[in-house]
Length: 521
Image (cartoon, rainbow, N blue to C red; front, side, top):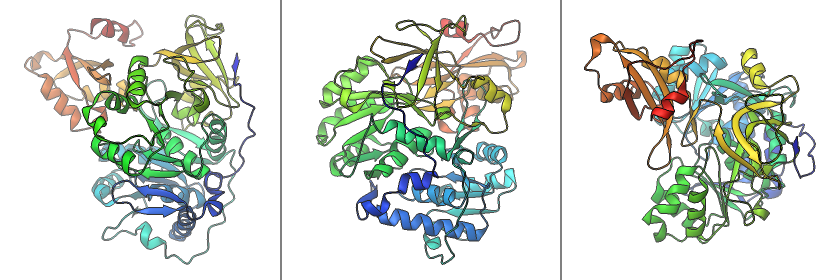
């Protein structure tokens, strides 16, 4: 068993909005959130005051403890206000991918039993259609403005009393992001107030921040990585978050230069751009102190190339939605000394085992690769409405089986070398092969299908479909299949390659033998 070198942190027994904004009055006029394109700025005092007023308006509208509110928005300076207002009103927030189709959104609404939606006007049609398909949604609010819908801006004028909701941080679910875990279709991950807040405290000793630090938030807040590293953690510590709604390299580089960004939390595709794109040389990035990459594996050579080009340290972090999400990070004070390719050391209060892939009861020593198991206060409460899936993920002794394969060196650095699980990580977003396979099988010309991840020339893992044509569909093309899927899923889930085969390799149990497909690629 491997244990963190840091001192344990006590569980944080307060609601997430209080855990993050407890020092808002102290930080006062320090900019909390800045729109990276138009410069709109909210101070800590404003974020604190605004979220309390919106919470009052939500309560007045009928939001009650135990309700689920779907937050469907790209990154904006209003996103944190909506999130903290909802939790202060007693609701659980389920975050929704802004590029989700109406059908995908409706599935999440139904599964989570969401009764309220907060969206933005450009996404309103999708939200309306999803609400119609799902049923049960009482009202759709907007962050900006739209005819026929109450806006958060208007809600700031609410004079109703601030809701006083009795929240049990250990039991009440604050966030309900959707994750596919180690396999299958997306499931609601129940993260309590205590789990999320405690994970912030666990990360702090290794990655401290404070007033004067400026973080660029281009990775999405709806994703647990963005929610923690780019929203909750910096706002808890008095740093300034500069918000971008999407990644455009020139806009991203300009924001670093113009806002004097000190820290970047990114995914590997951005590291690739920083390492190789010629536009990087046209901007002044000298304000940067460090970069942390997470959400997907990062090649050690690519990390070194980026670090060398920019002349600053680059470290990795590791975790998953079911872990609130952080378990490992390269500490800021050790970035120059960390071995290439490591995802870091255990954060405070966290334990880890590396177990044999052949014998899960056998613990392996340093240097030997096996499945990574994690135990700590940041482990999820469970999957919503799926006790069997929860039991398959977390054993009776409290160990969460990550599905990742790795080893630890003698100094305690973790290296993730492979994945047991079948998930595809496309630019940090999870794509479940089973979901795409089910969709492919709805095509009348497809007899059978399997999907695996394949690495493109730029190092991104993308969905690759292996398709068996129906005898009557001998002329079915790759382009037709890719278009069929693209019309029915969010962009990040699209099939990028199709290979036609005579039969999908399967075990006697019917399970797809994906390793054979990988070996044939």
